[in-house]
Structure formats: C-alpha cells, structure tokens
Length: 162
Image (cartoon, rainbow, N blue to C red; front, top):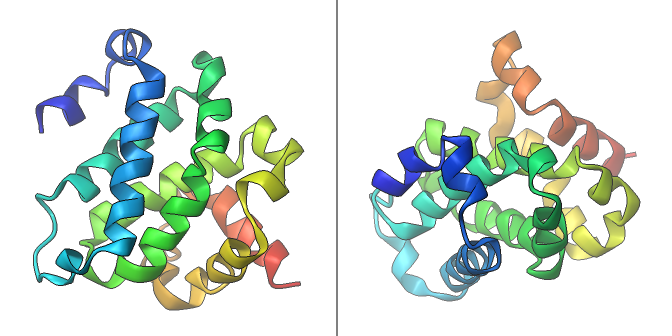
C-alpha cells in the first residue's frame, strides 16, 4: 500500500534504487510462476500483485528513467509478466489485471522494445501473449479510455496473430 502510493510521485521514482526494484519485481514474478502457493483464492494482498503496481508506476515514468528499459530487458520483465498472467490472470481482480496490462503496454510502446523485440519477447512468450486478447482482455475493450491505455499491447497481440 504505502510503496504503491509513494511511487505514484515522480520524486519517489527518481530516487529509487532501480536495479534493486526491477530485480525484486522480476524475482517475485519468477517465483510466482514456479511456486504452488499462488493457487490460493485471494491473492490481492500478495507481493506479486503489489509488484505489478510497482512495475506500472515505473513504466509510467519510462521516458524519465533511461536505465529502466535496459534493466527491464536484462531482467526479462516482459517475459515474466507474460508468464505470470498466463498462469494467474484468472485469479486477479479486474483492476489488478488492468494494471499488469498497462505496464506491459508501456514497455511494448517503448523505443527499446521496438528495437530489441526478440530480446524482450522470446517466441514462447510471444505465443502466450498472442492468446491474451481472447482469454482475458475482453472486459477492457468496451470502454474507449481503458482500451486506449492498453492499445500498444493490443497492437502487439494483433501483430503476433498475423
């Protein structure tokens, strides 16, 4: 809660130890995909969900954090978020699922992703991502303002399906 709110402010994000935070997010998401404990009913208060919010806050400042995209690429953040959503999207409340999709969308929209797409999104992750629209993005497509926040993600999925 507290950190989630703190990183909504530019100053807090700019003074954060980025390698530590990006490494933390990557580790939490990796462990969530390798661990059975995520099969519990309510996961909204878990660190996995909080880490998605931290990631979205970082992604919203992507232009002001030049090292972030390199760290995200090195820590395989896109791949880890895709794996996490592939395994656990059905357990996430709609608002938290949207947060994860918005973070992915911001990363996909970055110049670094466009330049090094294969490094961000290996084929296996691309295959998983290609299924997301039909599996769980439907609720976000009806509202124009919401759809706009994940448009780069939707475009990427469309490209993967052709």
